[in-house]
Length: 283
Ligand SMILES: [Zn+2]
Image (cartoon, rainbow, N blue to C red; front, side, top):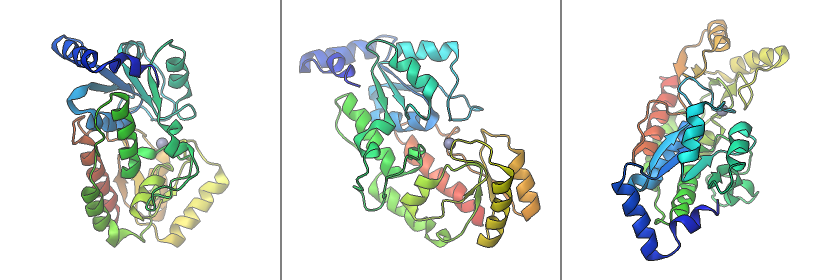
């Protein structure tokens, strides 16, 4: 994390030169993130300052990415690598940390997420749930940390007004329940005061035992779950079977934002799309 500072902010005049040289040449400043949602956050936070790319492919689960040759090349060219954290992506994290002098940011290690202090009343952020990006307050904190790495002014990637509008639109479905593919929407639920859902799989996307599969069906029935969410990255038979058994519709939700473009407004767009997809469960 510290290594980027000497590179970009030795002195005011030097700093400007670095940026202008890099911008005029073919090689822009490149920021690499492990997963797509972090790329949405980084691009929204940095705007024109840097080009952002990510390692996750459209068909790959966000959990513990495997690395290709082109991914290694990207990591080596990047001035900053942004990761969720060691536990979420052990392979990528180890590789990045073993490159001498490589600047990286482990989001889960940011003081706000690693401490037990409840700073924002709306969030009650305390858990080690790695799916931080589905909470817009957390996304702003991550965005600010990335901006700080480049020494650029702190600016929200989704405004308080935009968050408020989303909260308002979710109010009518606040008490309604649903079945999710895996435990991915906990932080979304905290931010917007909606149900965190009943996950088919655990927080890492792993299969649960027969006993909890049975329990899931009972809980889903009792809670009056209205749909089963599937995620595009997972071709999931479990979800289809459960939806059939409980006579519930299947709905697609994409917490990875695979179709959302990397732009300055990309993160806000991702959050708006996610809310629309979420509400579609109950329509
Ligand atoms: Zn996940």
